[in-house]
Image (cartoon, rainbow, N blue to C red; front, side):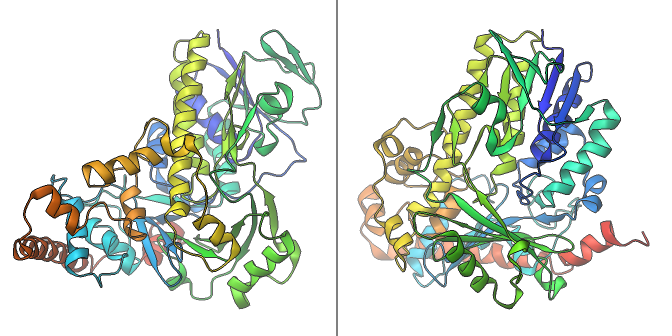
Length: 516
């Protein structure tokens, strides 16, 4: 019977785990043990839309944590210079506006055939209503009047200080609900046939949750569970991270994360309320740490902190353990696995794995079948997100450095390109739909990445072959109709948000004005 659960490790993963468990199992004994001497990674400041499902489960309202965590809202992810230098495109959250007609997904590609000069960034503008807000850096939460066909509480996420978020969960959610907090170094781990018997010869539990980060103290170091590297699929394994102040806060406090590809990787830009979080994700196969730091500082320009102590260097363990729940130990967060920061997937795996953990704890007794179910579901989720991230590199046409040349000519493994399709974000599904159904899956974000990198699901020769009609006038009429419809909706959405407040003004009025 799983009555007593001990979480080892704090940070955002540890306290998100504690919050989830005390919410879903208020009658269980939940304890979190964290070292007073080991700092957390402290990054993971950008989230994606699925975090809304987690906050909804826990009953956490925006106004409760935003003022404490330096938070702002996020509507999209921007990819700059990923396809080619000088080009950028967006991946907004939420569902595209299709008027309940899946054929609309191809309308933009019809527009691209009809007007080849159309920039790739136009796809998101035409298909996602919230891009009207992104382009003007505006935001609102109450959409009762249906200003645009967009649901703020489902189609938005957050930028926040990950360390402060963990502390807020600790002080305002977990401890008030009964989570026991122990500050102590785990110096000894006693084992028996069931896994872990005790910690420091005194802390005993029915289930131990490993939230010790890349160290993976319980699952990796103690139980010796095999780690499967994803370095053959994902190119980056290091990062430099720092913080920079605003110059023009009203302008720079943007409602999206900007990812900019540079010489040997890419740089994130995450605008929070009081400062900007930024970091350079790179591969040490192509550049050493010191050179990477110089490239990062060059990218930041005059805003780059001068002292090396202002930067944190992070070695990323890219991949996942073969099993995430072994005997009486389950891993959540970096201790389970990590892809890389692209697409803000770090906290995503935390709350999604927690959802699966809760489902498999609901029967009180845990069987080996429950562990199999957790391991399989989480591994599939992780694998497909990793493939989705890898597609950002696979579709790139950059070749201006050795790093990008190697990516352009990369030999993808047979497992990656030929295995059975599972979820919509995987390699096989991307290839299958494009070549046999002539569309990109409408869910999962692939259509945005494909449009931004001009990986078209259809073209004029394919259309003629499939429809047995080679009358160019016929096709031009269809293309013009699709183009006119998209242009109309884009203008309609832009006009509809003209009175919506700027992101800065919205946050100030609702969360950060001390007078209120």
